[in-house]
Length: 466
Image (tube, rainbow, N blue to C red; front, side, top):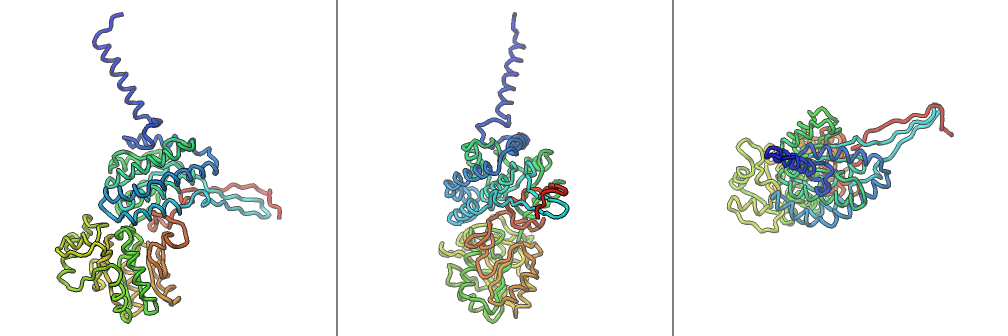
């Protein structure tokens, strides 16, 4: 049989197409959860979840333990890469955030069944997975969000398709690879947690609309949360915050000052839970400011410098200049020609209640202080500048009535009393950790049980043995 040139070309083309198909096939084990195309990533996660659905809770726990162990060995790498790639935050604080996410994100122990029994028999309520979850991670916490949500979503029995922020794609991809290797090390399903090598708006839109994505979890700014909520799917939205911290006349002022600076400066104020503005009653304001001067801070006292700083970190439209989000205090001040010590953690200044630094969520180590007459005015202003985000608020007081009044008025998901803001996510305090705080959709501090659907199983007139 003679083979002409056209037939040879056809054979070569078929071979090349087959090789390409195999390289892009979801089961390709060399990818460790990282794909070129979002469609392939979703398909792979869908296949993995079908297998994972048959796993026992004990096997899920084994997988989560392997993930925690592998991730714990890489916290310094994640922290260093995160700061280098995104240009935001502090390495030492990111190390602590990663340890928090690894150690205090709940696993299968969070999935507690409920049962009702009575004359009508027994009704059992159990938590089942949604299936495949599409999750969006921000550049402010690129790997912390993947780790925290990854543990919770997998513990709940789901597979996960992550769409990381392009600004943190390298470190995000590394986290996904390490997680998949850890899962495969204990013979778990391949591609249980996946992503794409080059995340983009286009790939995120594919994920949001994909028929095999059963649930959306968006962690980020108001824009991405709004898009997720309009996807037509079950959606969890973790949006912005602008946490006020109120200090009244009964507070331990020295401790309050240290706690405020520690919370505000943590990872250069990137956490949405961090103190963004201080509201202090007049009779203790001078003492608080004096104490704050003792904790690696730089105080701006003149209007000219304050105006220069405002022009630098805010755009002409009054929005934040993203070039300074998460930057060190000395870097920011150097840009307006004022060199300060590298040990300075926070820049602070006393301003009026309508100053843009009070109204806008800066997400940088700049802390405005507002002096008010009394607790009534403090609570009123605190509620106003929180903007109804229902995210986080902090208060320093020894007066239970004052604490109660502010907590009831502000209605935030997290309310921290007499501690740095990060106590609200379990750092140095009781309670589980989370990096997805769902104020807009009401789930609050998400954990494994958040990513389940509640199912009812009824046995009529049976197995009630009272």
